[in-house]
Length: 496
Image (tube, rainbow, N blue to C red; front, side, top):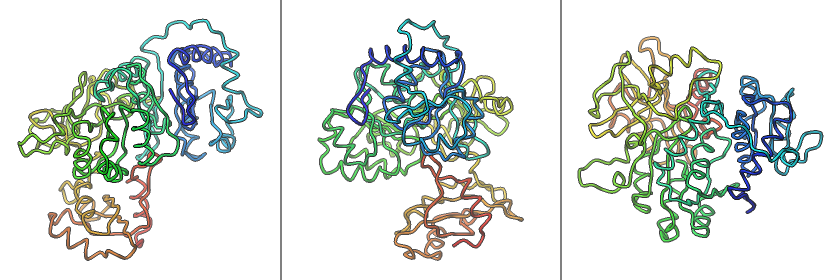
């Protein structure tokens, strides 16, 4: 583990440190099973805390580093955390919480009136902790909360350890893999899926601070990085830079894209540079933050059958099962046509939602997790994710998938971002509304968009309303918040 400043810990040093830090945390009066919240920037201390909680049987509650005080207050209170560990970048927000537990300063944060994470580690015993059961709760990972209050997915020691093995395989990590960590560790999925999976193969994780595509490629070339992750917004920038000198990426074994939908055209352009090293996948917090499906090298390379498998999320990874079911839960055929809810069985699944028995019963049924995602599965097992179920628009009894409409509108020159949602309609139940961001402002008008939609979409899919906005509302994980957009358009019907 190497931090942005170049300093880090070996595996052995991390284990020794975790043992002592675990004893130090217990010395604060905690018991195994107590919750320790982490509101931290990306530092080696974040991983030290995860490791210490693992050996001591404590439960990590990650809080997004971008959260406001208001947003952070809910998971902290809901989980009943007794300790909050913070770094300097969130100090003011942590102090403003009015937290009645123990505040612990980590990294460069001066302890002041608080306990120091380093002091806890130095004061702790080096004696081994009692073994922790694989069934013991290890993380409470709060979902993004795009609908209602966030729910805390309960992840066990066993599910996270299993996920590390499953992801190492689906990511194609070699022994001793070197990762360039582009995702924030305060996102629930990142530590289990990217960091711990590298520990499984005896690898090294290099943490990045603020980064851009140029600095990422420099690091890949300089440190012989074998694995990294690309979020959707930088796919075009990456392919543009990589096309100039593909040899700079020679060390890469795999390049992951997941988390949000990207156009096949953008993925294909990346694949033209990196070939079969591109991994596309589908996963979720409820699966310990890891992949359920993934592509393999042959899926990315042209096969001559006219099927572009980059339009899919790949097939179920070894150890996982995926089905598509109708609204009653009955299986639908794997024909690539029948659309239904995607359900998952995996040894890395959560045990349920923290203090949410009703939500747990709805999501977990007979060993299957009902994902809420809508899609198809073809005869060969390739999964195509169409939409989040909550985002499906039903207008006059007809299903409208927002991404299909968005893709058409994004084809209008000058449109740089678009999100489509359903708004209440007295007659049709819902009507299609599109929010559009244009550069430069005024370069595109409503008529241009309507003409393209009229040409390429069935009449019931065409937006009945188009709003031009300076920016789309985003979640803290930098995904479009359709819930916020629906609320914005509903309360401001004249917004243009």
